[in-house]
Amino acid sequence: MCGIVGYVGPKKVAPLLLEGLKRLEYRGYDSAGLAIMNGKGVETRKVAGKISRLESLISAKPISGTLGIGHTRWATHGAPNEANAHPHVDEKHEFAVVHNGIIENAGSLRRKLEDLGHVFTSETDTEVLVHLIEAAFDGSLEDAVIEALHQVEGAYGIAVVSSRDPHKIVAARKGSPLLVGLGDGEHYVASDASAILAHTREVVYLHDGDLAVLDRSGYRIIGLDSLTQTRKVSKIDWDLAQMERGGFAHFMLKEIFEQPQTVASTLAGRLLLNTATAKLAGTNLSDEDLLAIDNIVITACGTSWHSGLIGEHMIEESARIPVEVEYASEFRYRNPIVNDRTLCIVISQSGETADTLAAMREAQRRGARTLGIVNVVGSTIARDAAAGIYLHAGPEIGVASTKAFTSQVVALALLTLKMARLRDLSVIRGREIIDALQALPGHIQQILDRAPEIEALAEEFKRAQNFLYLGRGYNFPTALEGALKLKEISYIHAEGYPAAEMKHGPIALIDELMPVVFIAPHDSVFDKVASNVQEVKARKGRVIAITSREEPSLAGKIDYEFRIPETIDMLTPVLAAIPLQLLAYYIAVKRGSNVDQPRNLAKSVTVE
Ligand code: M6R
Image (cartoon, rainbow, N blue to C red):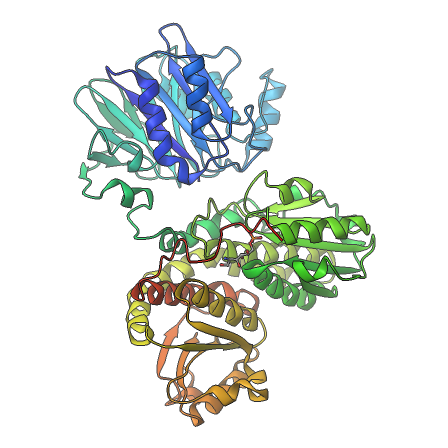
């Protein structure tokens, strides 16, 4: 989820790249750098931190040239420091690469390259690319890039320059967006058109498997088989503000729509099909450590607490380890029973939430092992937890958490799979979980393709004063999450409840004005939820149901139905959350709320 920009033409390149990087900063902002052809070789400037620091460095130590590439990083492999910042160069500073994405076989490639004498200076997966290109170079940069890309597995958008083929930029994509910008005697490459929109509106979007070769006089696109590809030139009509959100009206909507990719990123490289388990490299927990755990405490706040509740259900059901889920703000002031055989799972998108951090420290003080499930690389929780699982969901800018939630649930499913397979979960059941995880991105996309249905539903309910969200089993937390999404951005009062618990009080609220959202996929508690639907309908409540198949028992009882694809019970919250996020979003927009920065809230709550 980083940003790339490159330029070849007659203008001074450093200011152009800095300007482009500033426009891309929303994509990632933990470190940045440039590589410029200075007439003699490749010269780089890199900093940890924001683009403004890179700008200061370049004012203090100018760099001149008319061809170069730049990058703003959102760390995935390695801490956000100068050494890990892009561009990465080879030992002789003859080649430089910027990269978005994840090279999944970086570990094995690195070992092979080191055996051949290559010296690595960063912890990144990207650095293998520059060494592979250098090793493959035989006079043509594009040929070397093609040879290198044949060896890598994973996702990439890259831009490459070299003093040994000094008049061109070579760019390539697979799974990470990249486009070429067309000017008069000048060409650009960027991960996102916002970086170059001030200079050109004519762009060519690269397809997966494309490689673009740009110089001052022109550009050509070839495949990894070196054959020429024809791609159409598009004209961009959006303004800059829209572009930074990728054409979406709000970051929240963009982030909702990113979920097929973000869930795929959380899964990337972590499923072991043969042994039907998960590989969680960053956990630092050996199989023996995981087997020695007697109990688990999950601590978190807000949306992250909701994913923790789903994790509790998964782990107890499949791994048979007792789990308690605690609000971090409560845990820190209790006298919790944890010891050195307790695993404390700390869930936080930002990795900086004050209560969650304090809860983690309290657990550590009492001798528990801590494992962070965090999105922001290099954040305090990520650094200080004994073990960690990164979500790899990219920057979440909208205050309402969306893509982080689905990735948290997926990360918890991976951890469950790993722990359960170490205990007594069968290979067959392990494979079923893997199949269901792999199907998630496609299923999410199917739901997103039907967003207009949810928008129409929002129109119907935008004036409601209250909402009730009901679910059972895995989807009681989904009900809580649906209610939280709605209240935080639309300011409508909403409550989530276990569906059967409704009878013990909230049922008094139900009348013909009360919308009740049932999360009712066809899972092991469906029949029970169906009875609760009947109870609401008998009191004239307006029933909106998220279902997964035609259910005769609900005939005539539902006012609005939205069907999601079927999956295994433990993953139903991932799919059910998507229409609930869309419903909250569309209602909030129709009520005129500032959905990305709702009143009174902050993206990261760093005070107690
Ligand atoms: O960064 P964290 O996951 O630790 O944040 C926890 C909560 O502050 C967060 O989930 C909050 O509830 C969101 N605004 C929910 O959309």
